[in-house]
Length: 294
Ligand code: NAD
Image (tube, rainbow, N blue to C red; front, side, top):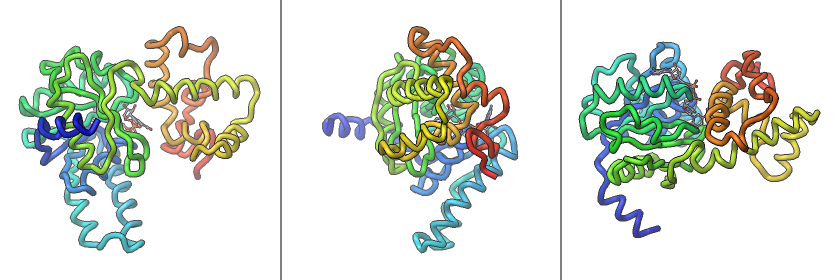
């Protein structure tokens, strides 16, 4: 593995400036972490409200560091200066690597990836933070599929060390190497995995959510499930974790898993996640999910 890591280091292109598409839970986190570790990043969204939220999150995290004496006010200002909010693709020619982090919808991702491919340089690496959608499938409509791979962060980005780097059918070694190097520069531990719906972690996590959904359907109390899983040693139980992920993202990702693994991941009745989503209980992002937050 060490040999492989060195080989990757040699092939990596420099990432002096990055961009993230979508300033939501994940995009905002990616922008914060990149800037914190020294790589300037354009944070693009379609809505000013999204950009405001992304910046507010970053300011909140930095303010905590300053108040704990881990960082000076000048250092905080320097990190914030490295996040460039944008509603357009103005200076994307100077971007070396893009992380797409818009909603978990294949059609929206297709449109966004095609759009960004037209405005970046030919050697810019494009990546997607999709939770579940096959990278080979997303590469289908790209002109340069060799420059595209998955870069799957976990939530919250600033705390979770793992990043899955996903190799699609046509992904070049240089795209993998550059993405691995950028993940390391962000202070993360990347692993390179092969492509399939859900990759590695969500192939494990979504059956777990499925088991939880079935237990709730059979009458279990979600709060008890959370308590038991915490006592089992997990940092949080499934209901709280779903509130953190967002019920919209969990529902859309669940649909992708059901399509990819119909024998294992399709359920005969609506799941608790689907019912919550239909009732606009999205979790922490709108203050109401399994639990209430305001
Ligand atoms: P989110 O709903 O919090 O944010 C999505 C953002 O994308 C919004 O700000 C929205 O305005 C913006 N957006 C929509 N269309 C856009 C476009 N065309 N161009 C630019 N911005 C656009 O969603 P999220 O939870 O951050 O999820 C984003 C991606 O990350 C999804 O693919 C999701 O599966 C993946 N992901 C989510 C988690 C999680 O725990 N939430 C974990 C890992 C990966």
